Image (cartoon, rainbow, N blue to C red; front, side, top):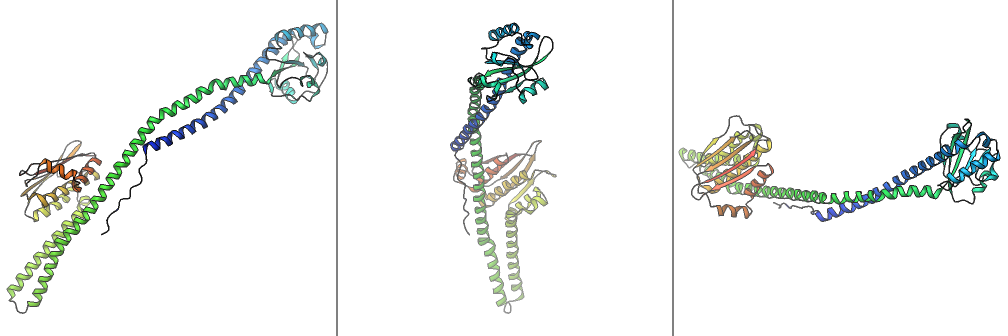
Length: 442
């Protein structure tokens, strides 16, 4: 029989897993941080243009419009000079580099560049859109090639704001303000630069807070992996040990008995003519007894290998099958259990395995005359006890068996732990042994 080889997966290092998590967190912080910066930049851009529109609205509707009289529209020099003084003292230099006021027909009513006053130029689509809809329109950069913009060619890049205004007499005009682009960009930059440290700091703090949690989770996962590996190893060892036990019992018990019966039948067949009928009958009866004993031994092994009654007839029938092997050896077995016992499949299997191992040890080592198997129910738990009056053993012997790797005891301990139960073994030399397991019903 080939030995079972347990090929365990290489254990995952907790430190390595946490380091990988930390690196992934750093990458996530960088990606999310820069994405957030882009969002802040766009938001800052919109906010800066909004501020520019508000500044132009304040200048056009709050300061200039009340002083754009009919005389200004008609081009009277005194009125234009008065408006020019107002624009230069109250509007220009306060974030606005140039001002123009247009009629809907494209005539320049006023400009701080006097050469443009009275000239007529086609309105741009943005200018017409502002007059038509009554909305404020921002143009990132005007077309410096247009004739009306020839005096702006020497200026730094500007943002042009168009908004409709009305004269005191109700005439519709277009107010155009030129704002330096660097001031608008600076306002947008200040906005996202103010929030960027908080964004990166918050993301880094979140990543740092998650590291202890990741360490704890990785540790628990590693511990769970080790526990599963230990359970698997115990199951493999128990299965290997069980196969060896069954093979040994078959070889030393049933096979030997059947071989003896075969030789006896062969000898009887050779001498049947010379033996009296009574001797032949006695030989056949002896051989039949040996065959029945072999059948009982095989049935006992079948119960050990697969307790068919455990699921079909229940735990009570399966325990009775286990006890029959001891009864056949002359041991008195008392079964004490509730008449209608309904348990979870896992709990039922655990109780059967404990009873099986305990009765097996009684048959091998205890030299007992009486064995008691009892099941006691409570509201939330069930307790199985297997007690014998055999020779027992000391506490030191029990500890030595467990620490020495006794597969039966170690397997039962592992099964009880997995099911949330408690296994207890008490014994005293000359006063028998009691194996008790208590487990929750659900």
